[in-house]
Amino acid sequence: MTTAAGSATQSVSPTPPEEGGGVLSGPYRALTLGIVSVVLLLAFEATAVNTAMPEAARQLDGFGLYAFASSGYFTTTLFAMVLSGQWADRRGPVGPLFSGIAVFASGLVLSGTAANMWTFVAGRAVQGFGGGLVIVALYVVVGRSFPERLRPAVFAAFSASWVVPSIVGPLVSGAVTEHVGWRWVFLAVPVLVLLPLAVMGPALRRSERAAGARELQTDPYDLRRLRLAAMAALGAGLLQYAGHRRDLLGLVPGVLGAALLVPAVLRLLPAGTLRAARGLPTVILLRGVAAGAFFAAELFIPLMLVTQRGLSVTMAGLALSSGGLTWAAGSWLQGRPWARAHRAAMIRLGFLLTSASIAGAALVLVPGAPAWVVAVAWVVGGAGMGMAVATVSVLMMDLSAPEDAGDNSASLQLSDALGNVLVMGLAGVLFVSLGGGSPEAVATAAKGDVPPLPFAVILLVMAGLALVGALLSGRVRPSGERTAGARAAGEQAPGEWTAAAEAPGEQAVQAEQAVGTTAERR
Image (tube, rainbow, N blue to C red; front, side):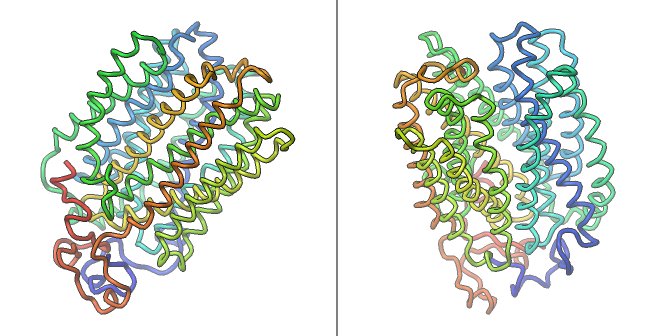
């Protein structure tokens, strides 16, 4: 892999230009603040809206459609991620980013003014489409507008932007819902979209004019890839619907969903992802493993604290808020200059800490163990996830040719989303089959309502899955990767992509068998 420091290709029209200073220095200040504003907007929506949705469903008499408010968001996000990747690779990230922000805000208005639950669900689906466009476009902005040395710091800022919303979002949303009304949780957020547009717009357009078309793909949109994305989105939606049915009739949409989802995913993700081929495929896979293991465990911990220790729902949720600060700290740590040479080790340590934290949370099931052990465990887990997730994002960008950054960013987000839904689905099946009942019982459950066995099994399975991620972390290095001395000498590995040989830019991807060509990924 050719890096920005000391590479033989650095003199060949790199993009973006290497300048001194950090992410808040003159050339990057507006872009950084704009990106942070966008992520803050998405983070607040995710934390605040989830708090308001139960009251919205009650007033709209729509508890029967409650699950679709979440699955509708997820389904449209899957398709939008792939569309955004192709759009950004061919026209630059400005179009999908600004369009996504506008669509996202429109969905919030639609949900906030809904007169019935079907309209509310439609608004959530529109929000998901806009969010999918935005998150992939942001990754492309980082790749095209920031030099390699600053990207870890930008991804650390991504994580830090979630800290305040994760702590105050539910409290603010709860207060607004109780004293003003749930609709204002949705209707107040669109006003905030003006801030990132005003801050980031001019700087982003200047950056895109400087980059020009030299890092854009010239081939037409890949309609086959878009059809596969639609198949994956529809299949995931059907699987989620089947999971909520929990009866024999649910088998029909479940089988149909799997038949659509599996072949689509195999073709959308980089070749070799599911078998953890070295390089980019393993990087993409690890994002899904991390998201699935951590968030599936997090989904059931509040219910565990309510039913096993008698905590209130509010206190059970606050026990997990400790992970927000350490997530940002872990992400900041991987952004230090010395961490560049230890990417695989950072990922391995992150997964080991995550596994230890999930297993540690299960200690609350031991009689006599204090309930605060969960908060301590989640401090450790947040740090581990911050290191692992941010480092995976940095490696994805390092292993992507500039013209493929959009598609690879979409694959990374697709893996994250699929890891969430598939592993959470597995956890739900385990919970029900082991006598736990409906996970949605967290709203009304009390101490003693659920046996401890389902929680113990789920947490141990998720801890084991995180250990698998640690074992796979050594495969993030592409096969045939050169030593540091060879890189400094400017030697080129057989089949290695370089900016000098193919197109201007900072990164180099390795031999096609390790990373997969554009044709193979599609």
